Length: 543
Image 1 (spheres, rainbow, N blue to C red):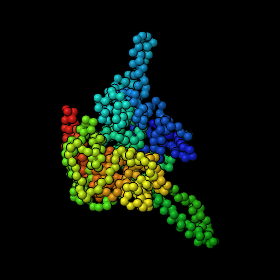
Image 2 (cartoon, rainbow, N blue to C red):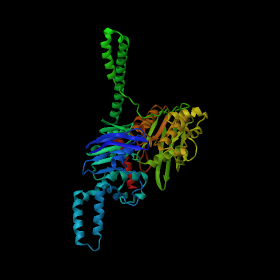
Image 3 (cartoon, rainbow, N blue to C red):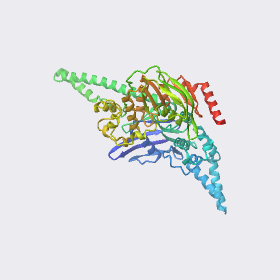
Image 4 (cartoon, one colour):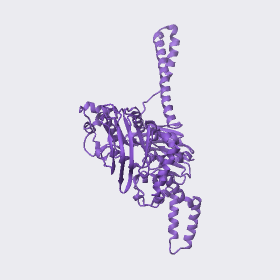
């Protein structure tokens, strides 16, 4: 069990949390949610002891071990992968290193023998003999192949480091597990594995995530941060959403009835207060009026952008034809004779673990890369707008937000351009902020503004939900569902893919393509697709 007791945190004059009291108990998974800036990550740092409170404290059941997901991807670059995972249980790792140091001594003393014996006993109690196999099992489950287990962390790609650090947090069956955005940069297979792990995890979990499907799958409770307070709800994310909306509705209805009663009492008092025969009744009603208290209904701190993609022209029947596209990067075949044709109603989700393949295909289709062989042709009625995974160059300048967006607009009127920014929650003085200093979420909202103002009838989006809060993801999801044009996108958000796509394409290892007109859930459940994927994987291993 871990609990926050009257926790207050002030940053300058602003109180981020005020007198928060909440208890997280064993056997439950708590989803910590709230708008960007509400303090989700900060609260996890308070619980983990990384950040001190202004007042109040955090208590943990004596003897319980707390583990949290490290955010510094370079912290363990000097260590190998397996050691990094085992470091998740700091005491066990200390014992292993001390044992090794003792046994490596040339002059092994009697004191060394006694100390080694003590360490061996503690090591056995902590199930140390299974430490390496347990670590390997976690790494394999998250998609880190065995050949990388003894590699240096410094040699791993960013997405691989994320998985190793997640394995570190999960290692050794911690009593309390704190996870801040654990699905970021994970492929869908790794997310599915993590879901099953957490569903079967018997201790306490507190997780921050913008992935609604993930929260629905793993959470038993939702802890909602709003205006510096944390309200606990039993159930998953969807249950929280329905419950919170119902609560506000009930409070409004109760206030409406109270207001009607207040009006009725006030009219009676006004009418009969001067009437001697009714004065006792008027006095009684005054006392009743004083007792009526309206519920304070504070609007949520959450803000939803308005995302609406409106094509300037209707798309024709011929959209895109791709024939035998191939591409090799750094000696690895990324795309292998890929062919497909898109129709005017296609909304295609590109799924699978090969991130580079998806990005490479999108960049080829946008003319940023040349294929090694094959060709593609866009229909004459199509216009494309592109959301790149890496937008660094887009914002490497000193333009203000308003000037940056104006350069992409056919209509140069400042009021027209600011209208699009306003929809994406850039209000007033925000328009004069330099794009170079924007946060990740603000840059994403700028790119979505650019896509909306383009009037394109084909949208290509490479991981658009990265850096967005739950409200922006919901707004984007709804905007793409309504979009009347053609869509090609990649996303790790299960619900986003399931509710938006009507066609699934997976580029498997080796660069071949699986293409099926279906929903994402149906695709995952398809035995045929599972067999095909396994065949491709086996062929790749043989090669």
